[in-house]
Amino acid sequence: MRFLIKLSLAVSALAVVIPIDEASKSVADSIIGPHIAPGTEIYFLPNANYPIKFTQRHSSFANPGYAVAVQPLTVLDLATIVKFANKHNFTYMATGGHSSSVGFLRVRDAIDIDLSKFNTIGLDIDRNLVTVGAANTLADFADTLYKAGKEIPTGNSPCVSAIGATIGAGVGPMQGLHGLMIDSLRSVEMVTARGDVVTASKTENPDLFWAVRGAGANFGIITQATYAVYNATNGGKHVNADFEFGPGSQGALFDLLRSWDSDEVYPKEMAISVTLGYNRKARLPTISVSAYYFGPHESARPYLQQLVALDPTRWQNETLGWNEMTQAAGFGQTFAKACVGGRYTSHLTAGLRRTDPATWASVFASFVEWTAARPWFRGSIILQRYNAGVTRRVPEAERGAYPWRDIGTLVLMSNTYDGPAYDAEVNTFFQPLRESIYKTSGFDSPASTSTTATVMRARRRGMARACLGCKC
Ligand SMILES: Cc1cc2nc3c(=O)[nH]c(=O)nc-3n(C[C@H](O)[C@H](O)[C@H](O)COP(=O)(O)OP(=O)(O)OC[C@H]3O[C@@H](n4cnc5c(N)ncnc54)[C@H](O)[C@@H]3O)c2cc1C
Image (tube, rainbow, N blue to C red):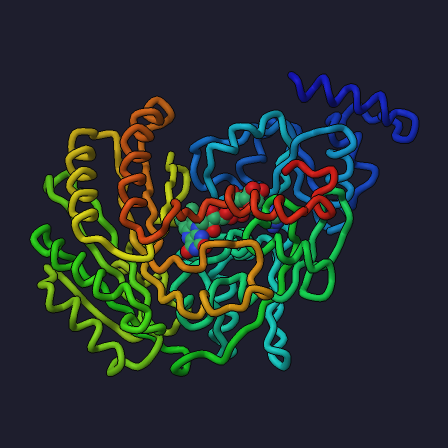
């Protein structure tokens, strides 16, 4: 209703220049429509085509509330929509779809700006650059580059938007080799919060480029991004290994993780993902490890053998193209499952510099006890260990806004449950659990990859120039 009232005020304000004479068109269409290309779609919500034609959120946790949905066809249309929203003080939000944040609850009666039509990918093999649109996923990167004998650091899940992941830093298995996704980012084309179409790079709008690398969601809407690409390591082949362990192996596994805390010991070619869960049918804790090694099997073997020595109940390893890594992980199950949307899932993250086995034994025991007593909960705790050497060595002048370059292990509490009625109970358990993890994380203050801290950092640096009139 609030949106409708504001919209009618906007109609009267614009009536002089934009005649609203087609009764068959929605009100929103009548206002914005005359200024945009025919291929740009506008739905006044609810609309039956909205769930079919527009990107829906991966998780229904803390859903933003929209009154209008727009799918711009061109950058100029996007700029028109942003200017329109600014002028009439409408909240708007760009959608890739894979984040969930309580902050989204503040987005009410808003315009959903769906970026699905920005979906081209171009590889410039001579200059070692790739350009992707806002709708391209990490999977699009992988296939295009692998076929050309190139690689780029991407994330763990093929379904996530490449630019969406990048603007929060972009962590993933090749981080040890090439750093974060922001470290490969060379430039972006974006519509600023004021509605100007600009390029941001080291040489053009460098402040904005600094902010985009970590706090990107708050300074404009990126339509395309250009990254450096690298010759594929080991001819593009990597070792993919999966392990499952019984509860008896957990102590030895946490000890092994501690021995791998040093980036001198843990190889830059390796990445592992440890998932701690609970099997409700068997009433047992579950532990699985997915390992990637970007190099030949002989080099991977000494590290994989340390996992084999922990007596897995099941394990396998195979050599695959790097483009297949995420689909193959977890015996081919993990990330296929992660990509299924439509669930109610919240996330809490924490960063570690070191692993404290006693903390992890206690965290896992509490998690299992709490989960066993709550049949409505289906969550897991994931520890992703990447060599942070390259990430840490990036010179200050090249870094961008993202501050957590010392994180060696990223902890993700992925909490899937039966809806908002359980929010308070989940928070009451997981917030203190995360506090206990922070205490022995090796950081003086909590390190979390949440973008809030990064955004505050960007604002302190005086990002007003880029941020004028914006909704951040
Ligand atoms: C299954 C799953 C796996 C994941 N795996 C990884 C991983 O391996 N590595 C990793 O780094 N992250 C990973 N993430 C986290 C993910 O990168 C972030 O949640 C990211 O914010 C998702 O971007 P999105 O555009 O899809 O999400 P959205 O929720 O749509 O966007 C998040 C924020 O970014 C803004 N935004 C979206 N697109 C743009 C744009 N083009 N320009 C400006 N602002 C924009 C939105 O308005 C919103 O504020 C994963 C998330 C999920 C759900």
